[in-house]
Length: 479
Ligand SMILES: [Zn+2]
Image (tube, protein in one colour):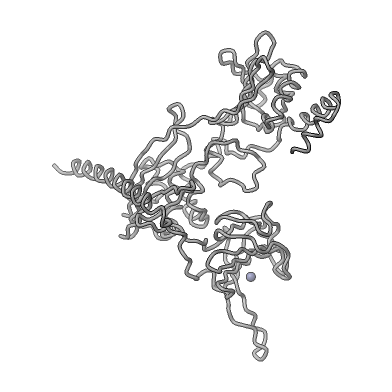
């Protein structure tokens, strides 16, 4: 960037203006990407959430994937696609947008006039709609470009104008409910400021006994759908929610939900939870370590997660299992199969089974496009026959468990699209479906004290709510 600035300074003034005009023309074109966020209409209804029960199991993202990120502008250029539910949290409420409502009638709030960005809009078309001209577009884009403001106008977002006597005084680019860019006219020209709002978390509690399904009963108990998914993720390592759930199982959840201006946001995080499955009790508490990473642990400090996903892809079926027999020249053509084949459609994301480092990314004979990861404990995992690699994943890249590293394909020697997956300990192939998976790291020694204090507080609060509920129920049913 620095050399570029020197170059700019060296240019004659006129050239500078021309260059700026060209640059702003490029950067201000609206991205025509369709909104990633789900419109309210497509929000899954609870009836349909029965299906995700199995998906939650197969899709064993790190439990915290669903936890809120600090409010930040969602850009379209992230290498890793956000977890499916993530953008919804920050999603601007898209307007229902009546079809063919031309000319667009603006929403007037005091002196502010707001326009919703539509597909195909650019800064120019939006300014025209607000009655402003090319000169205003130029001046605003000049001010904005230095800070990367107004760069990504996405359909569904809002531009708000404050115009007085034909002069644009203020412009707000509202990215979502929690963040907007304010461009304000001052003596010194237009000033740009990025504003982030902080929601207020509120603690809530829910508990239920399973009568029909986790999803239906948890929804009846008032648990937000997002929180139900988080619950299934936290305990998904120990409980198979598709197969293990029984009538009479019981859970209790202490969670936080974020509010903005008194309205609940779709941002929740579980603080502590307990699940009784077939008489066995599992308890989890959330702990944020000194580096700011949050994870779930049992009250004695063991991670609720395993260090590896059992299956690193959402598959249709297992098309070939692990067969360790070696080729025997006398007996004939017995060929070993040193991994598992997961049949899935081309393009299905392949996830890193565990935290690790990429030690191979490239074509590898019959394996086709292949990624090999090195993990702790002398474990390596191999992913073959990819159709393509994930952008940004190359030799030496550090990856997190659940992060997409490539996509299912049929490169190399493969008769159809599938993932061939291998798991090696000290170079020896193990059956990925049965190998004992190590637990993820426990709470580190130096954080034990802080953890123990927080864990006992959370468990106490969880039990206090539970006892209160029990007392109320008992009072109801006894004469
Ligand atoms: Zn295979």
